[in-house]
Amino acid sequence: MSVATLDGRTVRVALLGCGTVGSEVTRMLIDDADELAARVGAPVELAGIAVRRPDKHPELPQHLLTADAGKLVESDVDVVVELIGGIEPVRGWLLTALRKGKSVVTGNKALLSEYAAELAEAADTSGADLYYEASVAGAIPLLRPLRESLAGDRITRVMGIVNGTTNFILSAMDSTGAGYAETLDEATRLGYAEADPTADVDGYDAASKAAILASLAFHSRVTASDVHREGIAGISASDIGAAKLLNRTVKLLAICERVTADDGTESVSARVHPVMIPRSHQLAGVGGAFNAVYVEAEAAGELMFYGQGAGGAPTASAVLGDLVAAARNRVAGGRGPRESAHAALPVRPMGQTPTRYHISLDVADKPGVLAQVAQVFAVHGVSIAAVRQRDRLSTASLVIVTHLAPDAALQATVEEISKLDVVREVVSVMRVEGEDS
Image (cartoon, rainbow, N blue to C red):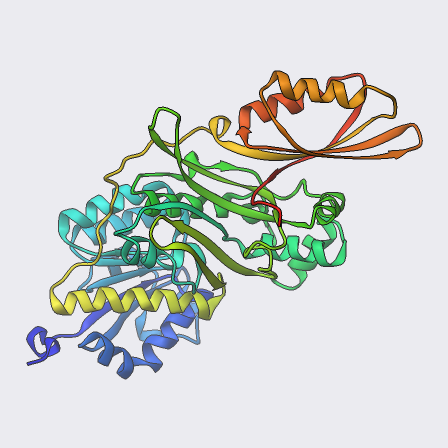
């Protein structure tokens, strides 16, 4: 006897929000109903769609539309799919659903990066499922491998490109030599950047995703406010050019690491900022609006996840994957993975996190300049890995790449160098990741 016969009823789904992704989810639920029923073991029925203004959606089945999301959540549904975004009132609706034993599928990175623990606790109490594959990298299967496939391994690092808008901008700057402002305008014209691109270009979107990745990878609760965040607005064409001279490229990376101190204690480092990486690195060739995440684990080694990180159909694919998993559990009486926060590692402040810097200086063209600059590095315990100097008229360009050092020591070094009489300008400072080939 099949599971579907044992259960004997339809899995009813409430959809909150029906924008670009929600419209694709609706289409797939209706057009692929027979295929989904076969995969789940029971029919999957779209019971209602909550939108702000139903009259603005003539393309949707009118009998399913409602402006009352709260009432739809309270109705006789089994799974709530949330694609509205934002914190309130969505947080209240999802907590209500979970507390009543209704499973939740969401792609809401902003909500999860701050309130994942509260949502997980509500799910645990009622026995409901909480799935959120679409919250980080669109169609890329990433979160499920982290919390299921690699559950028996020890992940040491997760580093990736998790925002397509910034990757498109930086890739275009690298390939064309154009400046940031004009490339952002082009990204907006092509639809890769929102009219207000702040969340993307200032790193807020990537920071939310970094918090989710760090929480899963290191079995600890990390929120967006724990993530050090810097955006790309300060990146210039000269920064891109400097990277090229070192056979590197610039990417906005989310970097989450398990850090072990000298005394053996462990902590989590989570940060988002522009980085120079070697062109030989796997992430360097990820262009356009694509996403890619690089995972290092003790047993599995190095893994790479790559694909479309946004868009209606790609993101809907991830949502439907979660929906099928949640529906199967409802039919079979099982439960999906629970929150794993047993390690409870503290978040290491950015100042204590080991990083490397690329520093470009305009200095006076006279003897003894390099010695004075090097002395400042020595005072702060920062070791220099490479130096390149180019003379021009009465000034010289000095480029220094450091070895690993605490970020606070590097910051203090730059601050003191900027005050030297022989230093006319600190042209740029950027962190460096990866070894040169």
